[in-house]
Amino acid sequence: MTSVELSGKVALVTGASRGIGYGVAEALVARGDRVCITGRNEDALKEAVDRLGADRVIGIAGKAHDETHQAEAVERVMAAFGRVDYLVNNAGTNPVFGPIADLDLNVARKVFDTNVLSALGFAQRTWHAWQKENGGAIVNIASVAGLAPSPFIGAYGVSKAAMINLTQQLAHEFAPRVRVNAIAPAVVKTKFAQALYEGREAEAAASYPLGRLGVPSDIGGAAAFLTSEQSDWVTGQTLVVDGGIFLNAGVG
Ligand SMILES: NC(=O)c1ccc[n+]([C@@H]2O[C@H](COP(=O)([O-])OP(=O)(O)OC[C@H]3O[C@@H](n4cnc5c(N)ncnc54)[C@H](OP(=O)(O)O)[C@@H]3O)[C@@H](O)[C@H]2O)c1
Image (cartoon, rainbow, N blue to C red; front, side, top):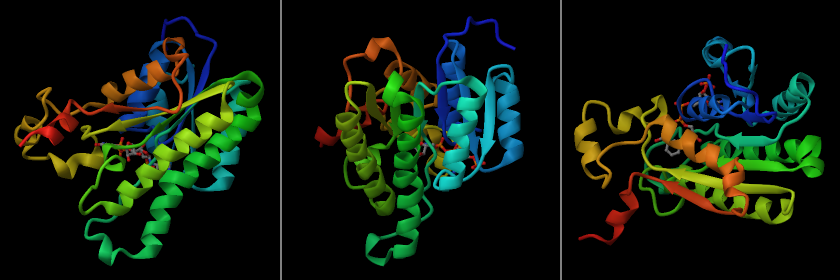
């Protein structure tokens, strides 16, 4: 149970039983939004709902790229809360590591399905169900890997670049009713990125001008901003939240 006054707004956050999605849901609940979270594992989702507060949060299990799940999620948010002001497309995958020259194209299709087409599918559905008539905002969780070459995770980088352009396409098409922005994080400490820093966090953090890796609440704060009145004149943008790591591009 939370004592924060309800904002009257409702958000749908995909892939939010842990990690960045959970951090986003936490930030939105903290300011009074009611939130629907998704994820594949039903038990993990239920635990997350209980931690966030079952009086204001519901969970709907499914795979983000599955159109039946997308339809069910949006229908159930509308049934439970009567509106869907904000969509945060966070669910993503990065299943391969290696040169793009040897990339299995079926794996690449899967990456695109989960990272790009799922975001489009959810955006189409929240638009038609609520946002087209009533307004709102969409935030796509991209990555710094979509802004520059990302060796050994090329398919992931290409998919995140597509997500950034999808953000611009949607921002243009959905204006002025709905603002659409992206967030491009560098390494955030989650299960997804664990292999990049586990056992060597201090070393990994040393290359960041701000001296540390990201945590989910860093992205939660950015998503809260992009779904608030404070960003009412911002659309089509990609907010880089990276502890300053991109500043190193000009060094040495
Ligand atoms: N962590 C980073 O350093 C980093 C940096 C840049 C961008 N990102 C992006 O941030 C997003 C979240 O990553 P994260 O680091 O928070 O990952 P994470 O800790 O592994 O959490 C992923 C969440 O999404 C759910 N999920 C995974 N695949 C899903 C699918 N196909 N359909 C529905 N739900 C799914 C997971 O639950 P289930 O496993 O139960 O489905 C979990 O709740 C991704 O789009 C990722 O590309 C992450």
